[in-house]
Image 1 (cartoon, rainbow, N blue to C red):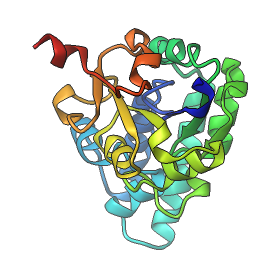
Image 2: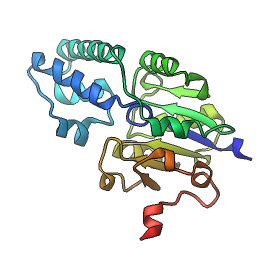
Image 3: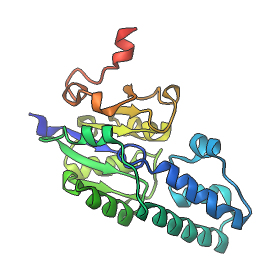
Image 4: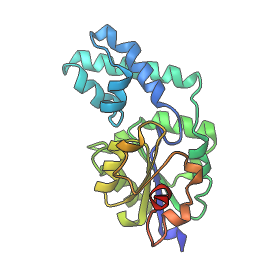
Length: 223
């Protein structure tokens, strides 16, 4: 029976193409606080972290950090309201999950996630949503995925995670879950810890990935 298995999606970089918006928001607000953030730095060092965790690594604690956090979240919200691109392959994979227990685990704010999911008409697809407010530790700690599995009523080994960053892959594997990584945001060679790495999620045979045989990498098999 497929309903005793779960799929846990990441949000940013898997379903929506929001990472460029996060980067733009950081780049626009940081100069006022005496810092800058390059695209290379963001994708190599900070992409897995929440806004607060990014700013904690860039700014001193205290009022400056809190002011920067408010400014970043405000600017990101403005950018999202102007329109956020989606990953059609991610949505295509989501549409294949009928009969599966489906969750979402993200470092984004619940209000942001709920707003976007409802605007896309896919909120009802998710049996549980775990956001930064629900976790003491974010990715690459496994807590977000473990909380999602618990809410879905599944053991970790009955879940597969869909991710796009090395830190997300690390969190999934630390949680004891299978992981499919997509190259939306990061280079293939940085996602080597995943069970399966693909360039297009729509091409993933979900039933096979979640089957008793475990995930298989078609590129690896072809080699």
